[in-house]
Amino acid sequence: MRVLNRALDDLERLLQPRQARYPIILDVGCGQGMSLLELPKRFGADKLIAVDVDAHSIDAAKEKAKHCEVPVQWHCANASVLRWPMPLLTWCFAISRSITWLIKNRCSGVFPRA
Image (cartoon, rainbow, N blue to C red; front, side, top):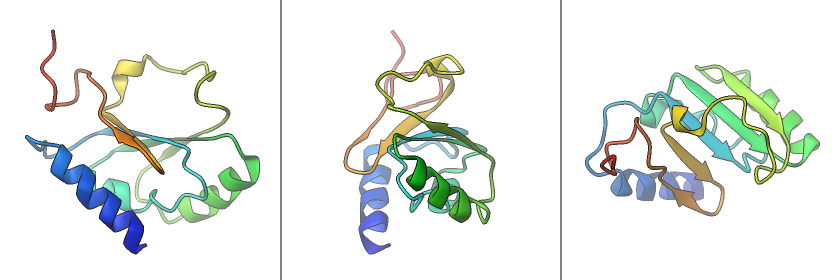
């Protein structure tokens, strides 16, 4: 949990200027769901989209998500070939276990829209 908190602290420093809420968060490579409980608390998410290629990890994450305060949409797939059920610009930012990146879209105040 300490490593997760450090990563989320780093992410918060990157989100400048910081919005009060990021309604939809995409967790790519969610693994066993270690971040699922913390993301809504820190970023005001109304919904999480969790993607992982490993079905056993998704099953473990679903167990953890029973305590999650927001709904989670699950995808057991390779994120690079996943047919997204919604336009990519509907989520506010993406997080990955080892790499965090911000997505230029209508939700994020981090990047101005062209």
